[in-house]
Length: 577
Image 1 (cartoon, rainbow, N blue to C red):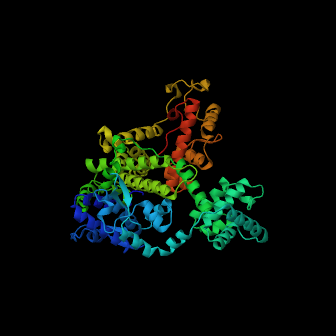
Image 2 (image 1 turned 90 degrees about the vertical axis):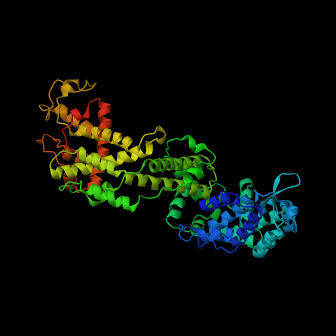
Image 3 (image 1 turned 45 degrees about the vertical axis):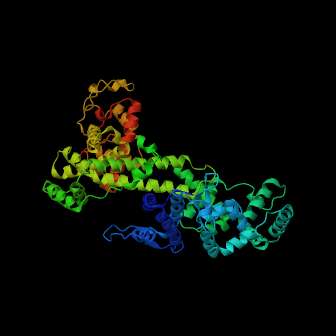
């Protein structure tokens, strides 16, 4: 059986192992009785569940945790099995004696595989000591009778089950041929009709016909001899996530429901494999109890009193002329995390990505399970939430660093600060992904170092135009090196070089860079540089879009400059901030 779905119930199971043996047996009986009184879709208070199992009186002032019924019922099955291992009970210790797997299979006329399925539906099993001294699964008569009362219909159908002989297989295939030739009904409708008339399951009929079609010269469903194409799987995946029902997709593509689910899971797994998952390694990740230790403790939010006091301390430091948005003021007022909370958050962030990466590698390439895919996405979703919290708590470092690196008049300073904050936030996110807590440094020191590097790189765009004589010797256009940039501003060689630099940019990026830097075009007189905000407004671009386009343009320009082996800051004029 899979592991616990609710961490509090796993902790409870571990705690119950220390109670007396007689009390543990009573707790097992209460957990089994509680299972049949819960509903899958209902919500239950954790304290109420613990009190029902242990009979301990819970302090009403404790924090209330709500759990969904389906997860609780699955964990109660596991709780009984795990807790029974701590007891040395034998089958003959019970009256009447407990049955083993083979005895129960004979009682119900089913296979062991069917019993394994029943265990997930509420058939409680306990680990009992067999006559050989080894622990084996045992089933108490009370548990068996309780399951029989609630699943009488499925047990009767399972008892009537018999293996399909060659005569019956031939008869079903012949009927399938006749039905497919007489009607235009979808294939899955024909399969459902055969299953209803023969008393067999839909899956059994589908597997029989598919096996026949793969080997026979005259298949029942010729169009199904090949699996769904990748483009069909992608179309199904998109439609499914847009809310299309599986039944409608099965009818549209003339496939069984299982084929639709399989196509969705295959495309989902392919999308997860393309997703980059990078984590900073930590030796504790490979320990046996790493998951319970690392994910067991949840660092809480900052205390409201501390937050309000920090806000009062910080707000009076904001200059009167500072017109930054209000949400940035809130970021400044947030207190920096303490060392222990910071370390815990970064370890959990990287461990969640480590789990997602490990479980992604273990996916079945041809038949990935939905539960495995959902678990990977849950890890990544929790990691994204932690990354968002860290970026929110340390945005203050970006704002303070940006204000220190801005020196201009009030209006230009605010625009420059916002642009540097935009750059610094991207740098902060990269720093969060790459920070290694095992080195013993605080993240604030590492982030400040990364911000200084990023802002220093950004200031290369903010230098006055220098002579090309001071630039390193490039490998191309050597005839331009002997002249000064100011005298070549309108020269034909410089214009060609500008065109080469700007050529990789898209239309909006090119227009934005030209306006922002004041680059002359086609023999026109040089225009004064504009701030990025004004340049974006002139091109009818939103401020955030202008900043994104400018960043992408910088990357493309520097890549082209490296190819041309020239220094970009010695060639382009300085932008206005």
